[in-house]
Image (cartoon, rainbow, N blue to C red; front, top):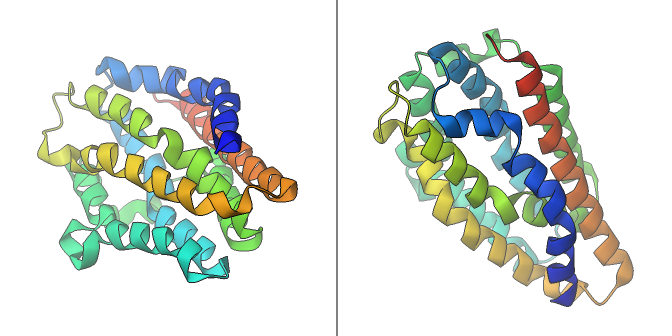
Length: 226
């Protein structure tokens, strides 16, 4: 437990670079143009659509059922708890459609190099690295602050004249869910925290995930349509 608290404190300055990133502040103001919102939504779709695969690859590398269980539950919720219309991908598709972006045509939109690097690196961590590094990336490196991040995004998008509450369900759902997801991931890490090598793996995954998200938002800021 002490390691997790210490790690959270150590990660906080880097997380704040995300939560106070210029692009997130743009969203928070609620005055982005329709074209700029489309741009954001298209780039974020790449990460959103891959997230269940991050969970799946990580779960597949975990050697025991108890440690694997919270990731399976997370995947189940990502898929609407068995109801396709409520899957998080479908909720995100509704967000895209509200901005006049056809989800079926996403492949025709160019993904920024930084977006691609972020997604590919996360995929590599979850698929090819030690499962503790993967959980570090998805837990302390992602779910730890996703609810704060999504609350900023939701509150900003709520101000947009182009979007309704119904269009924003994807963002609203995660504000509460990801707090629970994080606490469950932390709990499954406890048995591994007595080993320094395990702690180093968790920390490495968390730092890499945060670094990749910083890269993602910076790519969006550098290339935003004007």
